[in-house]
Amino acid sequence: KIQENAKAEFMFARANIVLEFEETLTKDQRSNPKWFPTYVQVLVPTLSEEENGEDDAWQGKMRALRKTVTGVKTKLGSEISELKSKLVESDAERRLAEAKRDEAVTELNAKSERLEQKSDRLEHLLTLVCKHLGDLEKTHEEG
Image (cartoon, rainbow, N blue to C red; front, side):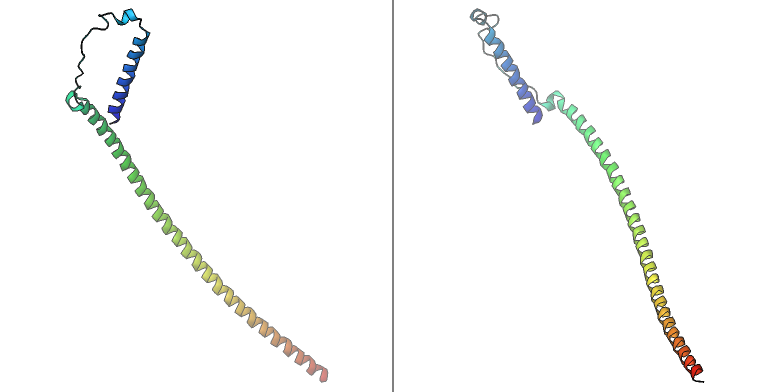
């Protein structure tokens, strides 16, 4: 379709050039029978692309284009597969890192809780010691 339009546009431009040239001719030149014979010109359609071999040329071009597109498609497909596998691998590594982080956080929370319990126990013992020392001091002062 595009080729047909291009060919039609070419022929139209060519006809306009001929008309422009004829407009520059004098009346005597236009009446010259050698240049402008009195006969009817019959236009016969040209051979179709299939009949004159142009179709073979286009098929060759299309085959080459398909081959190039197929090659690019194959290459992109393998690159996409490679990227997907890297993404899956990266996702697995991320999940493992998150699991390790969660485990470390859980362990730290447990240690923090145990430390807090020990601190509370030490504070209680310190209170008892202070109270006992205070009782001893009173007993010592009374006796």
